[in-house]
Length: 325
Image (cartoon, rainbow, N blue to C red):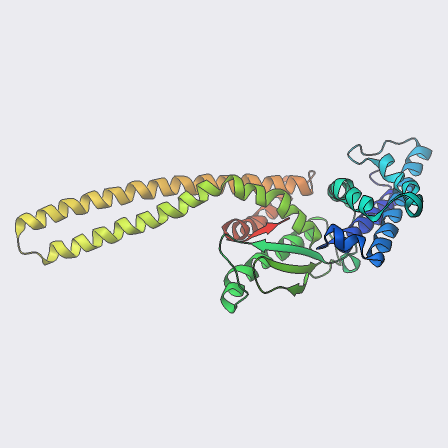
């Protein structure tokens, strides 16, 4: 089915349907959903489209006696339309809501993985806004300082990642990533259009990587500070040694300077070891991302894209911000 245009068209239709569903319910509670008849109707319509597209894919595969990818529950999705037919008589909005939470969101994730594998391009301009939440260990307010030092670098890395994805898939007319809205206080909520793939990729790879290596990165920062402290101590002792007129005191201070410099060197070597470990881990993360995006990349392209991807990973890894799901 990989080169079948009909399959790709139906897969694209399914992706649009689930993205619409995500957009409709984003930020809503169960109570808000069940009391909003327009959202219920729109969500139901998108679920019907999702189901009908799955039916078309199954029929095409059956007619051609071809096997469908087994990571998607095609039959379960195809029965949604029949299930919804009984909605007005038997089902309440809360059941639709729970079905979306339990099943559709996971199906969405698998469909996106399949779209990357099958190189299915999406018209992002028509896709709904992706809403992301940027959190930090410290409270954030939207000031010129936080915008320049924290938020803009993170969003630029997100944009650069999406541009790289478009380049890898040779999209000649990829749409520009645009910021639709941004809120004032923590968590910073951002509405962004055109970066669905980059957003998902960060959530699936970079965020788990940061959590796994958080202790090592914190230790690296700590040892960097300690190296500077030890150097400053040695400089102070040097000034005192030059200023003293007593030879015994000067000799004692010089001996202490040697010890301080030796300690600083030990910390510097430890710092370098940690730096190399983290650099190697980032390189492994970059390879993981490229293999996830396009497993069949040749070695030359892989190296070229690797060099473009590493600065993006550096920015995302060093940021105090984290994208919450």
